[in-house]
Image (cartoon, rainbow, N blue to C red; front, side, top):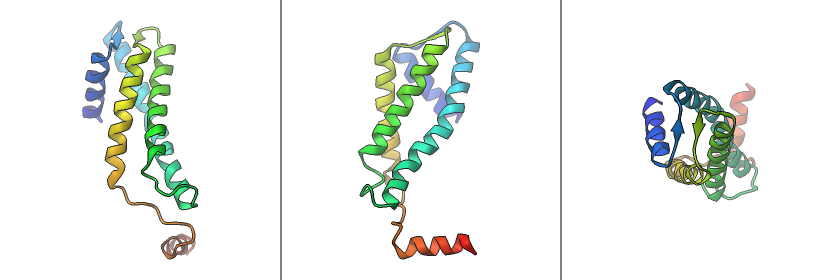
Length: 131
């Protein structure tokens, strides 16, 4: 996580992240990680759940990309808005969200698709949890 945070810092700094103190910067990243981890678990679960019930065909498509961009853009935008000691332009946040969403999308390409609700595999999984 430290390596990811360092990458995020370098990239955000190149995109115009400004801060008043090291303490404010550390607080920014602590809050970012604190909110990003559970929210990313939710945004990664949504496409898989929709695929399992047959609403979408794949849990690896554009929905994952859009959800990741939205999550990152909203989270950094809110942190920037509410933290007086941190400042980054809206364009910087958007570029960071695009690249972060793209990387997350590419990393999830090798994930296994969840089984459909009506498949034999899904029923076997349900039987394991019911016993």
